[in-house]
Image 1 (cartoon, rainbow, N blue to C red):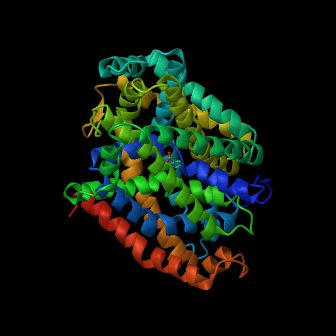
Image 2: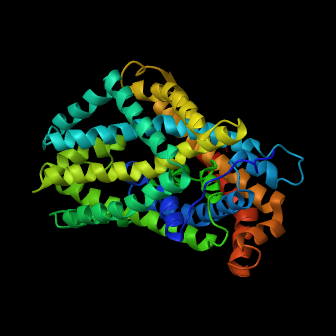
Image 3: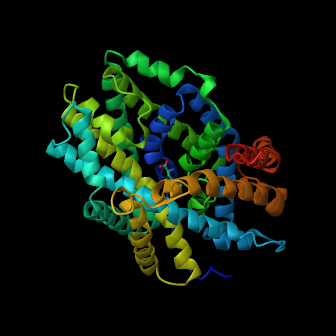
Length: 454
Ligand code: PHE
């Protein structure tokens, strides 16, 4: 497969690389998933397992993906074909699995982003201003149970993100990320500062930082690992795709470490903004996925200046979600563009058309499809479970094995160090050791145990 004749975009500056990659990692994972999963799984014990999974598994896999992407300068499927010199097994199928994972995640993710976008307007209009949880719950269910509103907001999100992608990699993805990331940190710090001044702030912090290991079961460990993959956008070719836009002189281990640290920082700050407030006003931390949409408005309604803060919170969530959505949608766009030899515009339109159909199955789980369940889950939960807990970890195992054993030490070392110019040998050896022996085994064990297979 020869893609050399297709002119590829790329990230132009070092800050741009960092902003775009961080933009992909930071998303609803930090603001929506991280708080409710931490709440539902016992707080700090979960947090610790998640931290461990990020460091031991996430970091090496992320370095491997970016390095392979940069070396191949192609979409994940073509990249795996190019790098596979042995040609004994169809390793490119990992890229196909990544494409499937991208569509599954986009289907439910775009619906949550749809709620967030809708909530910016609801927050501005003041209809969410009530300290009565019943009122904020009704506001949420009236949105999710209305098929038309759910669909239309999802389409708005898809068109908006598609529009940015049409501006290209440099102007679109990198340009927007460079503007959004600073805004995100600023808003987050303001919200944290307010939350920390509340009465029961310390209860919230204790919940978040004092571990209780009695809640840490094998299922919880699987969830924490799945979150680590989801958070860092790993196991489905997103980081491989972004790696293909990296400049050759970019220091990959350093960039990866920075992205991981900053992403953790955002999750922590989101936790610090949310839990003290939740405890102060007597809500349960384990409120599930609706925490952000039902509890948060009720909490903010009781704080002075809460109207403005609530608007700030949902703008923050929209900002975070935009960078992540861009990276999710970029995967099918670049695959369709380069594999089917169609223009980027056509590839974008085609991806959005597919998502309007597939995504509707998630958008309608609050209404028409409420009773449609497979294995006890509605399609929204099923897509989330399948992608986070199965496809991404499985992709992680295969990518680690491919990088460590098939592509091999020599190629990996040359590509990571930009032919000996960057990164010291020790870092490379440690990463390779983790990729070959530790990450795949750990992921497999956690998956098998978490799915009760042994
Ligand atoms: N990392 C993003 C988040 O935390 C989600 C994501 C997953 C993005 C997989 C790209 C690929 O919200």
